[in-house]
Length: 104
Image (tube, rainbow, N blue to C red):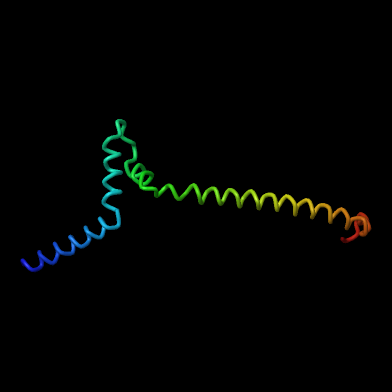
C-alpha cells in the first residue's frame, strides 16, 4: 500500500508542477484572490471566473467578425436585390404583357 501511495503522490506532484509551469496555478490564484477581494460578491461566481480568466474574452472578437460579415452580406444582398429588380424591369420591356385568362 505504501508503494501505491507514493506513486499517487508522485503523479500529483508531476501534475502540480505541470500546472505551475503552464501558469495555471498563478492564474487561478489571481482570479480567486480577485473574487475574494470583491466587496459585493457576484451572483454567479463561475461567470466571474470565466470572465477574469479570459474565457469570455475570445467572444467579442468572434462577435465583431460575425457582425462585420453580416454587414457585408447585407450590403451584397441589397445590391443583388436592386440588380434583380432592374433586370426584371428591363426584361418586362421585351416580354409582352400576359392577356387575362391566357397561361403565362
